[in-house]
Length: 202
Image (cartoon, rainbow, N blue to C red):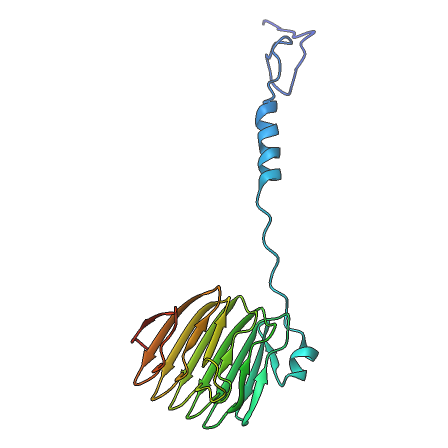
């Protein structure tokens, strides 16, 4: 019988038979690169301001998924609260007729004027909203009897749909923004200014 005795053997780095003089490799450049990548990673943009219940409610609206939604069938005009997204629905004949819709200081604005003479006097003013989507559906909808434009896009990224005889009859105005319009069935008889137009209404 042969007895083999292992004496004086050492285990290095958790491995059997690794010589003492073999350096452990560390890729400092790779580590630094990962750190730089984390440092250079883009910071997500902050979310839009949330809908504030009290402020929205004071304008007759309700916060829904972060948007102040104002649904009116009254004859009086509507003004959005400032500092939050806003959606206005003027549904029914003469809804929002006297005063139209003013997006004011809303961060974004969506306006539906649905029905004969809806939003007729003063039309729709996008205010300082970054994006503004306006739909004027029905005879004389958004027709501005005050001598100004039916829809004031101002500096927003603006999309306007006018569908119905003399809807948006006093035209669309853009000041520093971009605009696409869709005019159908006798709408936009006074033109669309610099707003690119087609006759396709969905």
